[in-house]
Length: 205
Image 1 (cartoon, rainbow, N blue to C red):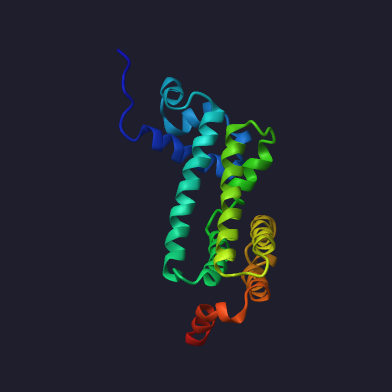
Image 2 (cartoon, rainbow, N blue to C red):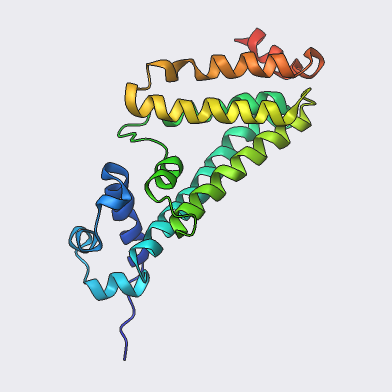
């Protein structure tokens, strides 16, 4: 009879993999190292994840769900004010690079490490970034931006630049200006009549 893994085994593996992959990159970490770090047998690891590619994809997928959950919470106070929510997306990204042990955006890092379009980890990463772009566009449309596609894409570039700069030059370098740059773009693309919520917030500070 095949033994069932103890409850929490899968999460234990994912938590360990997340730490190792985040610190050194997914390609640099072998499955044997994950086995040793978790203290689990190799058979247990492969029972939960059929391959390293499977483990990388599960890691990225879990971070995807966690990221959207946290972002939704961050945007919730600004429901009905899509212009302010656009800025909050950038603020959310800027806050994330301030976290201890920030090694770069997992989604961009993974897509760079695994360049084969068929790699499951890359597919998960690209799916997340595609969804971010769509959400920015939807918010820009809701805010009646003069060119929603252009605004969404430029904000996407600010976010990607923010992650790249923070990972190399630190969060207090050029990355520290991301929110200010986003505010300028949003103001340029959204008519003052639809900036009421953000103006009110500034006045109350």
